[in-house]
Image (cartoon, rainbow, N blue to C red; front, side, top):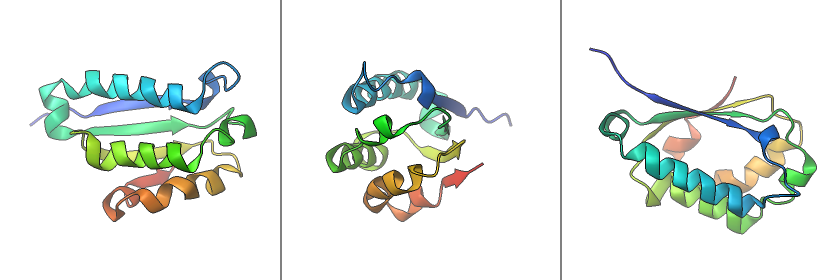
Length: 118
């Protein structure tokens, strides 16, 4: 049996924090998720997200407020019928860990276990 799994790549360096706020980027990701979840195979099998954090700077980090962090976590866990099978982080800068620690407490253990560094 062939298993269809949607791979969603995300590139931090494509986000210019001077031009778009974290909230605007979050809204775009919601729209993308709405389109992805319409596919029956994706509803059944879920997605894996790959976040390439190359080019992620302090300007990005300062936009991730506790409110934004909580909204991201809420959508990932409660508000959306999208199964997150894995979240893979690559090219993380050293200061990403403290920022991610803002989001982590809001995530259920099941999602925390699916986050990995490649």
